[in-house]
Image (cartoon, rainbow, N blue to C red; front, side, top):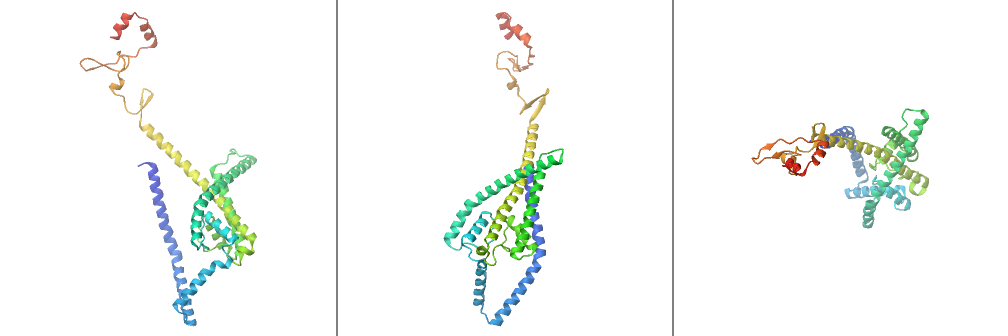
Length: 331
């Protein structure tokens, strides 16, 4: 089995093993809390139904009203500010789910908009990430020159460390900002920033959804959009380095495998390398009537040993012989 197939199979096995481990850990961490929350909510529901004598139909209607009213806490979701925020979330593939199109035209346009916008956004973030890596390499090279290091070139590890540090700074700073404006704890804000910049987008924490923020706080709206776009560009730079590193390793392994395959089909003969199969006697036979190359077959079918190759001086001397000697030698 080739090394590429072994690596692919190993990646599949490792990924599914990682999924199983993650499922077991989440089960142990969240399952008990989920059960307790459901019991508490069920007790509250039963108490409200008994206290106010609410029918199941009325209670279901109240649930619908509360769920549908939740996105409107931030104000109109489909005015220009809210629509721009939604378009940014679509293009960045975050998908919070805090607001979704309801009309048939809106759903159709969302699909067409995403088909064009998502590739455009990926190319833009990739390009910005490359420019950031270039800028980081220049800074690292100058820093090494200033520190008088032996090597001044920026290695892949240097760039990965720089982009990783920049990503950490953006997430920690954004967590502090959102904690102040949204009233979340710092850990919840950090969780929101990480989920957003990795494009997971669960939607349990969404910025700009309280106190009519979309219409009353334009500066905060702009800050949130800049955080999303610039943060995704920095994360794209880090991912770009990881992808390039993986592609480089794969190309090196492919080159080594090709060299090994070539070496297996090469046969060393008299300090020369001949590829492919050994030449047969028919291949070695001379195309001319003389036996200067290869073996010559006699009338009985037996192979006669090939005449030794004569040096250039002997050939020139033979060319100077009389025509009858040349004919006799040829025979």
